[in-house]
Image (cartoon, rainbow, N blue to C red):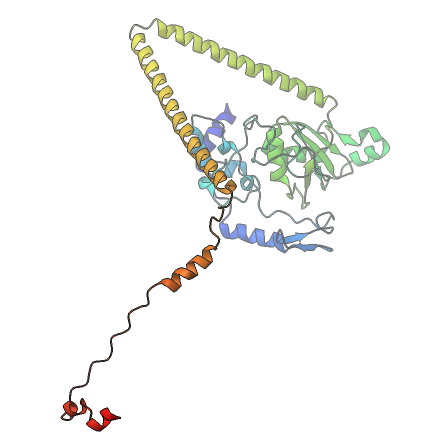
Length: 393
């Protein structure tokens, strides 16, 4: 009861902005400037790749941010859209990846959820709670999103600074006590305390003297959230954790328990669907006997809606058919034009020769008008007549 009240109180308040946009940009720039030995600049991805960076013990850097569920959780735009859609499952049910890492600057303006995931909120096995696509197999280093072929609820936690105790001597003397499954060592208690913030833990195994632990959650969604939230974080000391997916389940009968749990979950969902169907049938029987409902009018209105739907569908089919007929007619005409044989020349002369002859036979253009005559002078009339001697000549 107390947990439900706490979750309701968290959902009733807006999500807090974990960092500012300036701080987020500084974190990104610092991550891009990290260059290791033997790395090569990849022009395509605009970043450094290759080399041995990230594999050495001192190559990891501690994360500057960390999620605090009690302080950072709250409602966002995603919760508002879920309520508006009557709780329907959509892309808004995905959790914010930046929120899990403690570096979301949007707060209540974020389009993703700022809270812990519910057990089976994302029903698609092909994606994780952050909306990322899973792969067919795990990476070689067991990092990344994970595999869609396996429901993995166990995390490998490495680089733990263990608490010194007499258990180390016992482990050296008796190999059977090289791990702690019952939470008796201080390291096991520390691991459980830090990782229980992200969900219900089912089992914790600490490998004594090796600085590693295996944390098994009850639900896979919580394991996915914890993997991102605890990567490069610290426990009670200044270590930098290395969190990966576990290759094997440390529990003795872990696979059998998971199969039984999934079978029970499937049976429960089938029973819920059957109960919903029976409730609908009961409501229908009650409505049939309700005198305030005019069933004749209901049937008439439904038939009218169906008729209108059929008429609209028929009209769309006719328009579609008419459009295809016009398209095929245009294609057929274009094909005929391409396949038509070239025109046969019916005269002895070519078209170019006939055109040249037409240009030669065209009437000449009228000559341009002569210049205006000069005004007559005093001797003009006499100059117009010739002398007798000139005529004799």
